[in-house]
Image (cartoon, rainbow, N blue to C red; front, side, top):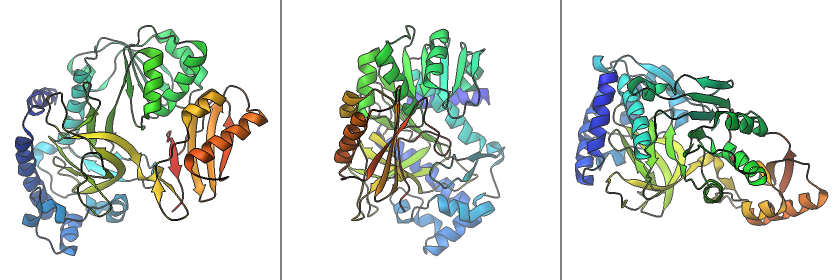
Length: 431
């Protein structure tokens, strides 16, 4: 496995510079093989084609695949064991399962192969290389997957340790009190932090109040959350560092990595076809926002072919860095984060963070739309809000969201409770 990952890393070093036409030729070659494979061996995919009156040869080109209707998480749930392809090439074995977090309310199990895991590991290394991270440095992970505080672990684990060896590591659960997190960070003094943007917001608010204490920090990497421009500006002003971002999912691994030169997100086109589609199913153009639909060209255990992953993103322009991998300008997050208005329209909620910061110093925040007339704005502050602050904040958030009096402010001290096991800055529960 180690040798195969090393070989794949070397290949990816070359393919990122290929002209887009060559990348697409490689995609189409893989697409034909994966469609033929699942059409022959997967009961659900056979029926999926049959229901639409399609034969495999009609969908195994980059243009033909667009005739296949995208499927969603609920389709995987309904398929059950039929979503497992019964025959997998021997060199792709063993098959493993990956469980999504269920943050959208629709947890699913995806079957993956050794090839999927090789690409996942190779893209982790690609991410590190693009940002010139020093493997011998000290790394802190503040993530939902960290279950207990871990101090001075001997390595980062994963492909870095397997391939190159690494420095010490620290693990902090995301629901640890912000003050405790900062205490642990000061003691460890990491060179790299991997952290959810929602947690980073709380850290930044405290650092703005008390002073920035991490003298050895060189990299701040977001994982799992949407990073807003306001947070990028605050981090830049406070630390002099840029937030380093990527876009991934449990189902398909790394989807796009943010370019250190331009800030655009390069799609991992060597193993994925990523489409951004408007409401009519047409390809979005640069600057347009649409649904993310993904085809996994390496998964021979599950037919991830035109999968509506439930996210929205904005198409980017070609990048100036010289890599020809397609780009996304922004990853906006889950469809679940879109709020609804009474007329049925949907929008991305922004609450006016800069104006809020002028009223009170927040450690963390979250918006939840329970109904068309009930929006809960959660915020963590050091001290309880005064009546005047509460009134002013209610006015700001209502106005910025375009409502009158639907927003209610809920004040927390300490840390926000997790929502579905993770931090999500905006959640819409309106069906």
